[in-house]
Structure formats: structure tokens, C-alpha cells
Length: 113
Image (cartoon, rainbow, N blue to C red):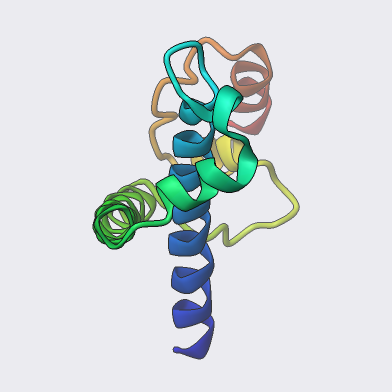
């Protein structure tokens, strides 16, 4: 549980960091006033309560979406660590899931059965 909360805080924090770095880069683009006004002005311009609320909301939505996709496509644990995942599926009669053209998988299936 603690590990999950720690990971969530790190991932949300990273998304917030990317949001603010993108805003800061925008202040120094051709259309931004950061070049003329300086770095201190640009930081003061982007660190506003509205930007913070947007960053937290976007980070939470991003975290939820990534966690959903991570759990949806999470690999099943391998019961035979001596075999690669594709070979394990072939040895146990499972489908390859798109790796049917993999030469090593076909060779393993041919030799195993």
C-alpha cells in the first residue's frame, strides 16, 4: 500500500514537472515575453494558482489513465522462468498473441511437440 502511494506521488509529480517545464519553454518561444523580461519574470508568470490547479487535475487524470492501461495490459506472471514468455505459451498450448511469425517460436513449437 505504501509502495503504491509513493509511486502515485512520484508519477503525479513528474507529470506536474512536465507541465511546468512546458509552460516555461512556452514563455521563451518566439511569441513569449520571457526573452525580454528574463527568467525570474517567466517563473513568476507560470507559478499561479490557476496553473497549479490545471497541473494537478491533468496529472491526476494522466495517472488514472496510465494505471488503467498498465493494469489492462499487464503481463501474466510466468510459471516457467527458464523459458521466454512466447515459448512458455507454446509449451502450454496457449496462443502466441501476434508472435506467430516469430521464427524462434515456430522452431520451439516444432521441437517441443
